[in-house]
Length: 294
Image (cartoon, rainbow, N blue to C red; front, side, top):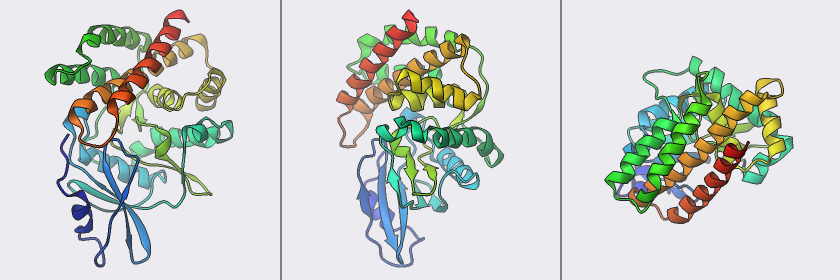
C-alpha cells in the first residue's frame, strides 16, 4: 500500500495549525496512520494517507462521506482537508469494544445511528460516490491475490464458488448509503451521544451488509441478531429475510478475511495480518457451515 514517508512530519506541517504542533501517534489502526494534535488547547484527529487502490480506498470519497456524516450529525466536524490528509475535531469519549457493541443496552442507539447513515447521509453527499458491493470486492481481492502470488492462492477457487452461492442467496437489494466497516472502534461514546467515524469504505450498498457487518465483526449471539433485525426493520424477521441476512453475514466475514490476505502482501503497517487472516477465515468457515445447514 502507498504510505507517506514521514506521516508525523506531514501532520505537523499542515497549514491549519496556529503554530508548531507535536502529533501524537494513535495506536490500533490496521489501515491508516493516525495522530492526535493539540493546537491552542483544542484536540484534533489527523489521518495521513494516500489512496489505497488494492482496497478500493479513494480519499476523495472518504472526505465526501465524512463531510456528509458531519452534516447528518453522525460524525464530528471536518476542520481541514487536502489530498492525503484530513483533520477532524477530536471526540473526547470512550471508544467501543466488541463487548460494548454486543451489550443489548446499546443496541437501540447503534441501530439508530446506522439507520441515519443509510437514509440521511445521501441528502448531504456531493460529487461522485462509490458503490461498495461485497461480492465485487471479494472477486477483485482474488485478482489482487493472484497478481501478488499470495500464500492463500489454493483457497481461492472454493472461496469464490462460495461467494457466488452467497450472492445468489442475498438476491435483489434495497440501496442505501453504507458505512461498510462497522468495527467496534469506529463507535465513540462521549457520555451524551454516540458517534460513528472512519469512512474509508463508505458507499452505496444493501442495508443488510452494515447489519451483518456490525454483527459478524462483533460476534453477536443469535438472540441479539434477531433483536438487531427487528429493531432495524420494525418487525420480527421472517425466514426469507433471515436467510438473506445469513448470506450477507458470511460475505462480510469472507471480505474481512480476504482484506487481510491482501494486506499481508501490500501493507507496511506493524500488524499481524497472517493471524488476522486465519482468525477471520475460521469464523467464515463456521458461519458458512451454519448457512449451509440452516
